[in-house]
Image: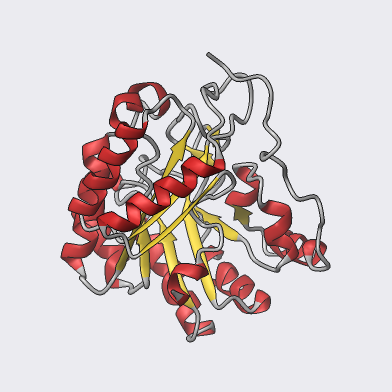
Length: 284
């Protein structure tokens, strides 16, 4: 059943912050995309206001049509050869101590865009050698060679979101596979044990608490160290409906139970997203 009324805890902070326009103008000037804009993230105003953003590379059109996501599904764009340097310029201009890079899924590319990810990582390293780098990657169709390309570039964190519980995969992300995603996370640690692995999951899609706890156990078995848990918010009436607004107390309980299972860092709450306050895990 779709939930019609938002509870009082689902409120977006409207204060822009003094750097909101600066961040927006810089992104536009360098012809960059951000997941903040494309996914209509509820935290965009806060993050832009603090001179931070999550850069989305490889265009703004995704080759998959997940039913939870606001990113456009359409004809893939040409890969921008200037994008790695422009992302690095933005990271330097914003003074980011921790940079987060994600992408659309590019099933049309032989390596899924892994080489482009590596180019972005290396460009940031050249311009901002003290900045730690986190990449949120697609599954690359399970290709370990593509994953190795990203791993060899040396990001501190490689994230891949599990998104939802396996029972709901066909409804929520029908072109993806739960087991493939677990293998991606497992292979991150096999390729380089020093790389921190991270995943994110949404709540409120129709899962039970036991569904969630089983995913936590699966993620830990795959070596995942960092976990984010957030409320699913449907971008439109055409997307998967919100089944439940999960109470903040339940998010607190998820965090407690996940930490007990051995995750090194867990961020859990209604507005938590994979890249939200991502630097906290590096400082912890």
